[in-house]
Amino acid sequence: MNEFAPVLDDEAVAVARVLANDHVADVVEALNRESRETAIELLCAVPFVRLVEIFDQPELESAPELAEALPRDKAGKLLTAMSVDRAADILRELDGPARSELLGALAPPLRMTLLSILGYPEGSAASIMTTEFVSVPSNWTVGRTLDYIRKVERTRETVYAIYITDPETQLLLRATGLRRLITGEPEDSILSVAPDRAPVTVTPLTDRETLAQTISKYDLLALPVVDHGRILGIVTVDDIIDTMVEETTEDVHRFGGMEALDEPYMRMGFLAMIQKRAGWLCALFLSEMLTANAMQSYEGELGKAIVLTLFIPLIMSSGGNSGSQATSLVIRALALREIGLHDWWRVALRELPTGLVLGSILGVVGIFRIALWQYLGLYDYGQHWMLIAATVGAALIGIVTFGSLSGSMLPFALKRIGFDPASASAPFVATLVDVTGLVIYFSVALVILRGTLL
Image (tube, rainbow, N blue to C red):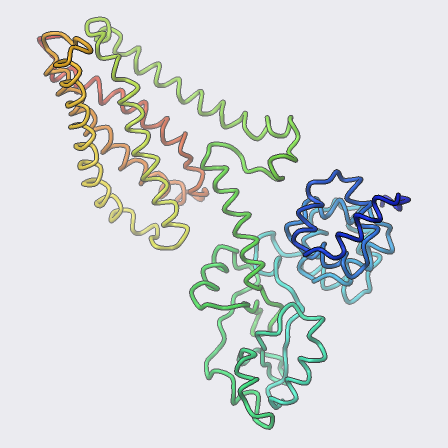
């Protein structure tokens, strides 16, 4: 453990005093812009209560490294005062020795709680839950419950959701909101003001995507994590927002044709950035070589009708764009559970006519463009320009239709074999459609231009 206890200069102390009075979100934003050494200096100078508020913010970058750099006793007190789920997040990112050293500085009950949370797979409900929730026995009254909430309010993640358990078995019976308590009579039983239905719960291994969908579906502020009827903790809506932002960022990176970044863009090292991007670029480059192979196969046709090469970029980009559109729509629909794997045939039946119509629109635009350039004298496509226009128009219909169909089916195929549908990146779809698009283009040209240019 790095026993870092810097001697602060007057300027650092002055800045720390300012940070102590600003909104915590602004403080975190300011610290993220500072170097690690400066950030540690400032953190050592702010009041301890403020320090806890800062580290409780998920937006604080390099929080594990900053916590490790604090003096051991201060770091131990910090983890004790923080929310349990946030403390677990910080410990999870540390290496083994540093994590063990910090855990050793904690009280045994808290240490056991954190070890229990750390034992669950990352991204599961139990890995992001907090054990700081309001739970009361079913034989309490409304007045007694409100008195209890006043006493424990500062030590709970949220007091807006109250969980009612059996006083003997500790099984979760009901859940109620603070509003129902406030509007109830003090002598009323807590069960009498709670909704007469079983609470919505999740298991410890529920993934965060399902968590987000459940919270959104039932409009909840918190979701209890239950194992064999007993409540282990709760996942609050702010935790879900943080995790979904992280997951969405990963999906965007993958969809852009690269590995997901582990750190903010400006904090990624040069070699780490190369490593994240080079693999995918090489894979896409190798697959793009198939495009050259396809063109080599039609070398003779290209030699006879050089004019066909003018429209290759147009043909390839149109197919790739239509495929990327379809892929984006299907991936998002799968993520929101608007469709499932069993709906692949419905999507195919929808994308097939859609691709035909979109291809026809582009085909008409392409024909009109060739005719306009020919009549205005901007370019001479030769005496068979009408056949060339027909070739481009027909090819666009086929390529856009194929792009829409293949782009919509690829996420289903990836999910079926166990991969993340977001791996169906736009560049990957574009590469796939580029190769097949050339084959379609030259096949259509052979049919229409046979006996004239070919």
